[in-house]
Image (cartoon, rainbow, N blue to C red; front, top):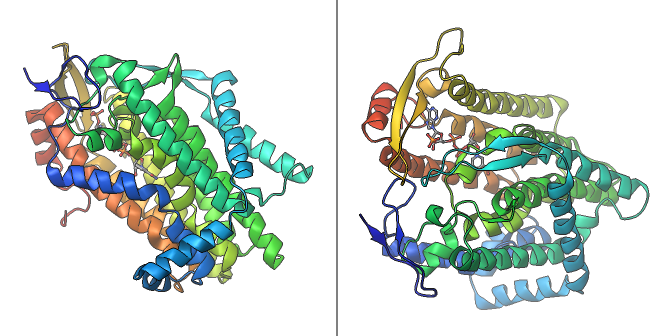
Length: 455
Ligand code: NDP
């Protein structure tokens, strides 16, 4: 039996759970990395903002500015000058969060269930994200048509809204950190690393709730993913306002990214069984990430095009759109194969055949043995994380409409590549602890992690 250490800030009863999903004490460089991210990320939106606003969209120019203290100071001064008042954006952001929370609570929805947690809990969720997304878009468009607000309201108040989003993400991080110690939702599903910074960054509680209100699903889905679409639409409106037209590259970006978000909500039940909800704990990474990182980094293409329109030939626009739709199809089809194989216990047809599966065994912290199913055919027979490759094709197509003039819009693709490679390594480690020799059997059956013959 292993007793994991708790952070020094609070004293809690020893948490006992040496099983999968409970990583060992992090190395010193991991702790340092978490600390750097927690300290630097909250102001990270200043870099794309200054690249677009002060440096003609050029990453090279912004790097030169960041190279000396005068340059850094001038960025802060310009950011301050572009923010006449922080009160109005704070109010607007507050209304946004309250509106999303209201929809999350009151809208009807089917019941969905998450994966069994390491402590053996299986949580219920209300699935109403799709209705909430349509209602939000509807209200935004109705408000713009009725002149209650301008369609470019988000683009116009961008700096203030980013400050508000980042502040909300930090406050949320502190709230869930304290809640994990004083009032945990499922105390046996907490993870303590022994490091304050690691606990703040990676989170302690797996699925923190206030009553039935699930903080993780709400913040990632409603605050983060819904914002992605609204921010994109608002920057398209901003382009129209400044140039008198919306360029075809902006349309392609909006179509592909809205498709991705729409899919997220249409498949919300599936999302409950992905790593974000089923395995990652709720700390700065997901709390600040969904509040500030998604709206600022995932929307870079629309932000870029609003200032620097790219007019693609109709053929190029169509080819990029088709590549994106192909990536999306593969992304959805691969994720769907896994869902169907598990739901039917392998009694289904994949690519015209009965699927090849491994019945894998695992134990929860109560000592109870369970079985799960690992699919080894279809997309899951090509590589163990082939759904990530599909996502990367789509991610590239989301950036490609911005052309080759500047690299900034491609930051999303670079970020997704790093995120998904790191995620595949993390997931392999967790699954190997969870399934033991059954995972080794799976690896022997499907030897490559991402790209057959290479990795
Ligand atoms: P997966 O949906 O691939 O889930 C991985 C989990 O699936 C594993 O932990 C394991 O969980 C189970 N599993 C692994 N292998 C198999 C198998 N052969 N058969 C059945 N189940 C298996 O990962 P993610 O949650 O990371 O990603 C989901 C999708 O979301 C991906 O397509 C990804 O590209 C996308 N994504 C997008 C992000 C974005 O920001 N745009 C961020 C992250 C992901 P178990 O313990 O249940 O066995």
